[in-house]
Image (cartoon, rainbow, N blue to C red; front, top):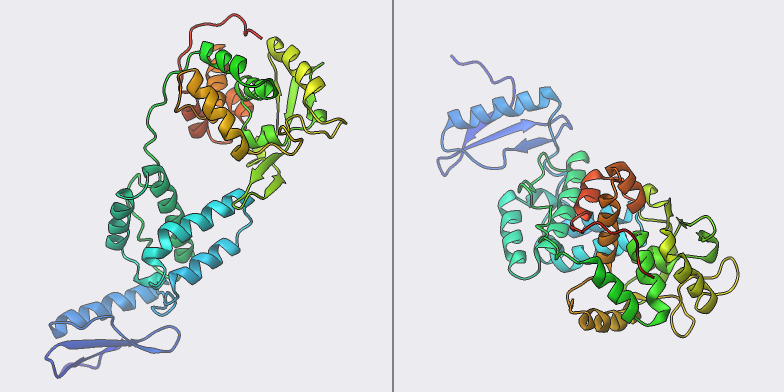
Length: 354
């Protein structure tokens, strides 16, 4: 006569299938998530479940019964994020994740659901946006694993969080100098600093007189101006610790910078170096009209302002700067990111025309 099972129990249902039940570490009697065709299959499931509990790998199957929308919003709320990063996360969540996963419980999101979602999104928006949304979903679900809501992250598509960035167009230095010549004088120094000091837009918009030491030939980066959704401006620290940096300036642009400070910058040590035509803070949205015209005039209608920074990075690399030196100059902590920003080829340049 067979002995009584020491873990769990199996019973035959009126349908002819078999149900397995067990008492979890929390003392609650639980059924298996599905029934079995044979008693042997049900018993085998119980053996595996007992081993799982002994290993300490057991997860409460009810823990993940929280709507993804609730969990994801709380995930963002619980993090200390830069305002622009928080805005990006909330936008990705609202526009790309909640429409598919919002009403599902965290525990009910499967790998197949993620694959189908990604394929659908790729047919609607750009690959870069989908990669960012996928990375956000993956990070949220990683935390769900850490919180013991689920056992395994369903985001397992190799390479899906890395955007397939097309190779950038090679931009000759002569074109950058042409832009600096054709752009309204108020923005000439903006173009020169973006190129030859590798400053980001937000860093330029936040730059103060006291951070620009033309006698020493350096610019200190200590802040960034962020334009949030709705047009609100917020001055914040650089995007990373590596963003705090001092960058050497080529002697050839010092005269242009002095002229700019004399004519266009705010007065006082704390005055902004760059302001709009009406004296307000520099806004990307307002500058876009100027930029669109000048890039079309020089025959580069698809050129991004950020591309000027890449030009400067490559010029620095051409002079023999090491990767560590380039990372410091760019304000990067990641060698991978720094390497991707050096994408141009230039002939040797002896000097930069003013």
